[in-house]
Image 1 (cartoon, rainbow, N blue to C red):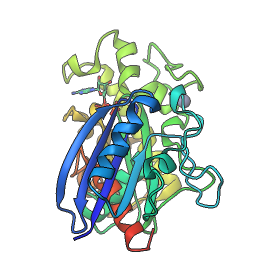
Image 2: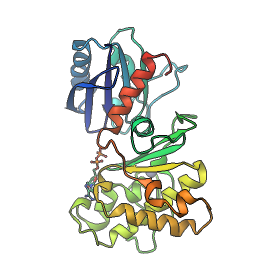
Image 3: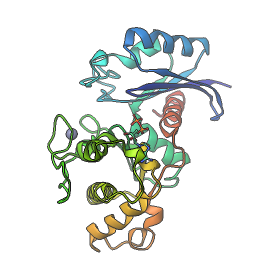
Image 4: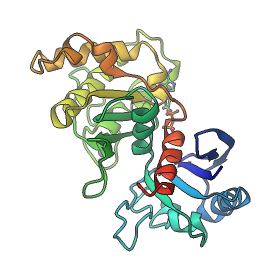
Length: 295
Ligand code: ADP
Ligand code: ZN
């Protein structure tokens, strides 16, 4: 059976795996994300050793996803300066002429969740990770959305909570954006501690739920998804999703009259089935589509 290499490239770690075409995982390794000079040779060696027939990549970004572009598959303007303008896909292939595909890490995650996980059967869905940063993958009519570049859901602007002691947020680029207000480090800055050490009933989670609910409302209003999946480290706090659902209903205020929202919000805003490997499984699926010529 043919073999597919999968890479989930993250800002702190790289997860690489080899899959059989049927989805059986054969091997997996994790490497810290250092400079390309240090990390790339190890990744190239891993994929070379396994003689892969195709490669799928889900990566942090921003990344150039336009196959017509001379910088297709490049990491572009990332704050991780060593990787800025880096031809990730080309270097990974190391001259091998095999089918390959690349998408954002969160688009990879929504592909996996839509095909095999919590959004199975949906043609329109969104995956948002709330971790060190916030990123969203958008699946529309059965395909991920790229558009001009690719969506940057995490930097959409929000209205600050009236009780937020830090209403500007911590994003260096924007005042009151999603990531600046609601990612793990934003919670940490707000409480001067670590988000994961707080009790469930800490008042900061009401503020957090307000932000995540604003995000859900904005996604519902702009994209009309059939399901919203919330993943990432912050969503490891199991009490939070209930608060987000309640707050979303409150902010929607009955405007969207659909039973999926009004009667089944517990199945509408959900956590991922494949966490923490949604992005990796999605990368395999991207590689598989490339292999089958439907990239
Ligand atoms: P990354 O985005 O780097 O892949 P994660 O998705 O694991 O990392 O997210 C890490 C963030 O999640 C940290 O800011 C951490 O404080 C936060 N976090 C982890 N567990 C919890 C928890 N139980 N409650 C709230 N925040 C959490
Ligand atoms: Zn921002």
